[in-house]
Length: 122
Image (tube, rainbow, N blue to C red; front, side):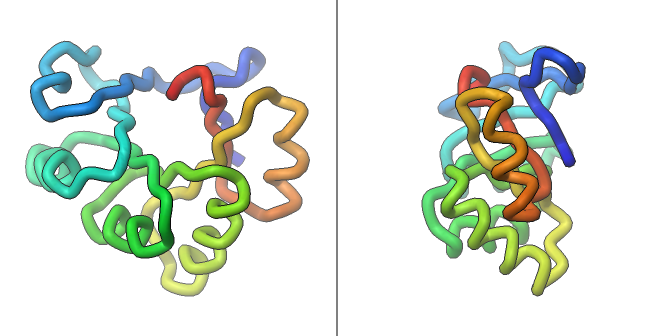
Protein backbone atom coordinates (compact mmCIF):
# COMPACT_ATOMS: atom_id res chain seq x y z
CA UNK A 1 0.00 0.00 0.00
CA UNK A 2 1.25 3.46 -0.94
CA UNK A 3 1.26 5.92 1.99
CA UNK A 4 1.79 9.53 0.96
CA UNK A 5 1.93 12.16 3.66
CA UNK A 6 2.02 9.76 6.60
CA UNK A 7 4.30 10.88 9.43
CA UNK A 8 5.75 7.39 9.98
CA UNK A 9 6.66 6.56 6.36
CA UNK A 10 8.72 9.00 4.30
CA UNK A 11 7.48 9.68 0.79
CA UNK A 12 8.30 11.51 -2.38
CA UNK A 13 8.01 15.27 -2.63
CA UNK A 14 4.51 16.39 -3.65
CA UNK A 15 3.82 19.81 -5.20
CA UNK A 16 0.26 21.06 -5.69
CA UNK A 17 -0.25 23.24 -8.78
CA UNK A 18 -3.21 24.84 -10.54
CA UNK A 19 -1.72 25.83 -13.91
CA UNK A 20 1.18 24.89 -16.19
CA UNK A 21 3.22 27.98 -15.21
CA UNK A 22 3.27 26.74 -11.59
CA UNK A 23 5.47 23.81 -12.66
CA UNK A 24 8.45 26.17 -12.93
CA UNK A 25 8.44 26.72 -9.16
CA UNK A 26 8.20 23.05 -8.15
CA UNK A 27 11.10 21.11 -6.67
CA UNK A 28 13.08 18.96 -9.13
CA UNK A 29 11.96 15.31 -9.23
CA UNK A 30 8.78 16.05 -7.30
CA UNK A 31 5.39 14.63 -8.18
CA UNK A 32 2.96 17.30 -9.32
CA UNK A 33 -0.65 17.09 -8.10
CA UNK A 34 -3.55 19.05 -9.58
CA UNK A 35 -7.27 18.96 -10.25
CA UNK A 36 -8.31 17.20 -13.47
CA UNK A 37 -7.15 19.34 -16.38
CA UNK A 38 -6.49 17.84 -19.82
CA UNK A 39 -4.06 20.60 -20.83
CA UNK A 40 -1.85 20.13 -17.75
CA UNK A 41 -2.02 16.33 -18.06
CA UNK A 42 -0.99 16.49 -21.72
CA UNK A 43 1.87 18.86 -20.89
CA UNK A 44 3.11 16.54 -18.13
CA UNK A 45 2.86 13.47 -20.36
CA UNK A 46 4.68 15.18 -23.25
CA UNK A 47 7.46 16.40 -20.93
CA UNK A 48 7.93 13.19 -18.94
CA UNK A 49 6.77 14.70 -15.65
CA UNK A 50 5.40 12.52 -12.87
CA UNK A 51 1.98 13.69 -11.79
CA UNK A 52 -1.15 12.84 -9.91
CA UNK A 53 -4.57 14.11 -10.82
CA UNK A 54 -7.52 14.69 -8.52
CA UNK A 55 -10.61 13.34 -10.25
CA UNK A 56 -14.35 13.49 -9.63
CA UNK A 57 -15.63 10.86 -12.10
CA UNK A 58 -14.65 7.46 -13.43
CA UNK A 59 -14.42 8.97 -16.92
CA UNK A 60 -11.75 11.39 -15.65
CA UNK A 61 -9.88 8.44 -14.14
CA UNK A 62 -9.86 6.67 -17.50
CA UNK A 63 -8.45 9.76 -19.21
CA UNK A 64 -5.87 10.23 -16.45
CA UNK A 65 -4.61 6.69 -16.93
CA UNK A 66 -4.55 7.10 -20.72
CA UNK A 67 -2.46 10.26 -20.28
CA UNK A 68 0.05 8.41 -18.04
CA UNK A 69 -0.81 9.84 -14.61
CA UNK A 70 1.27 8.25 -11.87
CA UNK A 71 -1.59 8.67 -9.40
CA UNK A 72 -5.34 9.00 -9.69
CA UNK A 73 -6.58 10.72 -6.55
CA UNK A 74 -10.18 10.69 -5.26
CA UNK A 75 -12.29 10.54 -2.13
CA UNK A 76 -12.61 7.07 -0.61
CA UNK A 77 -16.01 6.30 -2.14
CA UNK A 78 -14.97 7.18 -5.70
CA UNK A 79 -11.51 5.65 -5.25
CA UNK A 80 -13.06 2.28 -4.39
CA UNK A 81 -15.08 2.38 -7.62
CA UNK A 82 -12.11 3.54 -9.69
CA UNK A 83 -9.95 0.78 -8.19
CA UNK A 84 -12.32 -1.88 -9.58
CA UNK A 85 -12.11 -0.30 -13.05
CA UNK A 86 -8.33 0.02 -12.73
CA UNK A 87 -7.95 -3.65 -11.85
CA UNK A 88 -10.24 -4.77 -14.67
CA UNK A 89 -8.43 -2.70 -17.29
CA UNK A 90 -4.95 -3.11 -15.73
CA UNK A 91 -4.28 0.62 -15.29
CA UNK A 92 -0.64 1.64 -14.99
CA UNK A 93 -1.76 4.53 -12.75
CA UNK A 94 -2.14 3.90 -9.02
CA UNK A 95 -5.37 4.86 -7.26
CA UNK A 96 -5.03 6.93 -4.08
CA UNK A 97 -7.82 7.68 -1.63
CA UNK A 98 -7.78 11.04 0.11
CA UNK A 99 -7.83 10.61 3.89
CA UNK A 100 -7.83 13.04 6.81
CA UNK A 101 -5.63 10.99 9.15
CA UNK A 102 -3.91 7.62 9.50
CA UNK A 103 -6.92 6.12 11.31
CA UNK A 104 -8.52 5.71 7.86
CA UNK A 105 -5.72 3.55 6.41
CA UNK A 106 -7.38 0.31 7.49
CA UNK A 107 -10.67 1.29 5.84
CA UNK A 108 -8.87 2.03 2.59
CA UNK A 109 -6.96 -1.25 2.80
CA UNK A 110 -10.22 -3.18 3.18
CA UNK A 111 -11.45 -1.53 -0.04
CA UNK A 112 -8.23 -2.83 -1.69
CA UNK A 113 -7.31 0.64 -2.94
CA UNK A 114 -3.67 1.04 -4.04
CA UNK A 115 -2.86 3.70 -1.47
CA UNK A 116 -3.69 6.86 0.42
CA UNK A 117 -2.70 10.50 0.37
CA UNK A 118 -3.24 12.69 3.39
CA UNK A 119 -5.48 15.67 2.66
CA UNK A 120 -3.03 18.23 4.13
CA UNK A 121 -0.87 17.73 1.01
CA UNK A 122 -3.71 18.76 -1.25
